[in-house]
Length: 449
Image (cartoon, rainbow, N blue to C red; front, side, top):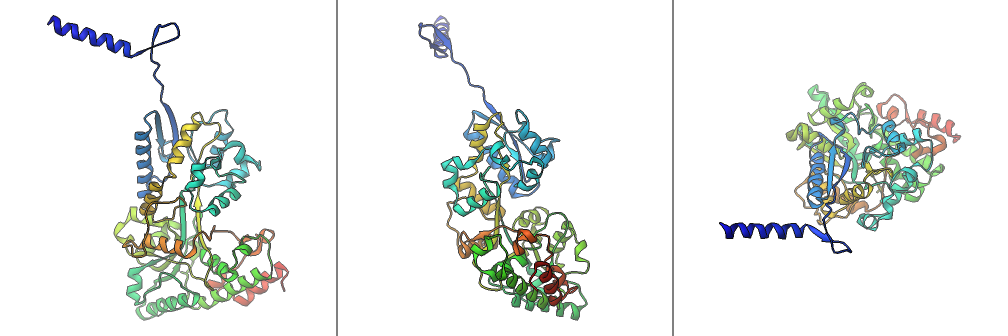
C-alpha cells in the first residue's frame, strides 16, 4: 500500500509540474487555457431537404475540425431574431456590435440599399472576401466574381454558393400520356409549337385540361426566363447584352420574340386566369400531372423532393429554348451569407465561410441540390450520369462554359431609361394583344415608330 501511495504522490507532483510553466524568475505558473470563441450563425434552407442537410453537415464538420471554435447555428424559423428582413440586417450592421457573426442576407442588395441610402454601404459594413486568395482561387470563373462585384458595388461579401439554373421543368408522365418526347436540349419556338399543339389536340380529343405552359405569380417568380433566353439568343452578342444602352439591335430582337410568342399563342399555352396562379398552387400542379412544362429554377428539385419524392422523379429539366444557337444561358450564383465588420468574432466567422469554398463541398452542393456551383469541384462529371439532374448541369456547363448571365427585368430589353415599359410578352402569349399591336404600342413609347 505504501509503495502504491508513493507512486500516486509522484504522479500528482509530475501532473502539477506539467500544468505549470516558468516565467523569467523561474517561478512556475499555471498554463492559461484559451476560451473558445462562439460564432453565431444565422442558418438557411430549413425544411428544404438536402440543402438543410448540407448546412448541418458543414456545421458538424467545421466544429469537429475546429474545436477551439463553438458554432451556434440558429435557423430563422427557430428564433425571433436572426431573420433576413432588410430592416433587421441594417440595424445589425449599424449597431456598435452585431448580435450575429454571420448574417443571412439572401443576396438582397437592392432592398438593403433602399434603407441604407449609402452607395458604399457594402464596403463600409461588410467583410470583402476578395482580399483572401483562397477565396478567389476557389472560383471556377472570374466572370462570376466580376458579376458579384458589380452587384455589390465593388466587393464580394461572401461565397456565392447558392447556384441556380433556370429551365422548363417537364413532367415526363404527362409527356408520355400525350405521346411526345420533348428534347432536353436545343429546343426552338418551333419545337415548343409542336409540343403545345400535341397538348391542345390531346385536350380536345379527351376533354381534358392539361396545361402546356405553367407560370406562377405569387411573390418572386422567374416567369420571364423563357422570354429573356429567346431575346438573348436573338441578340447573340454577350457584349451588347451586358451594355445598358438600347438600340435597333435590341428592338429588333424584342420584335422577333414577340412574333415567336404569337405563333405559340394559338394553342392557348397558359391556363385561364393564369395571373391568379400562386406559387404553392403551381408547384403542386406541376408534379401532380396538370401541366407539361413549368417555368422555374433548379432549386425546385429540393422543394418537390421534400414533399413528394416519388412524383419528383417524373420531373426533368429542359433547356430554355433559343431563337438562334445561344452563346449564353441564364444562371446565377446568390450570396446567402455575409459577415458584418462589427462582428464580435470576425476571424472565426471568415474561417467558417471559407470552409464552404472547398471542392468537396462544391461536389456535394451539385449532388444534393442538382444546382450549379461556382466553386471548383473534384469530380469529373459525365454526360452518361444516371442522374438526369446532374447530367443537365454538366451539359449546360459544357455548352456555355462561363458565358452565363443573371435574370433581369424590363431594363434588360429596353435599357434602364425605359425600364417601366411593358414588353407585352404575356399579353401576346395569352392572345389578348396581337404582336402587331404590341410592336406599335412599345414602338411609340420608345420612339421607334
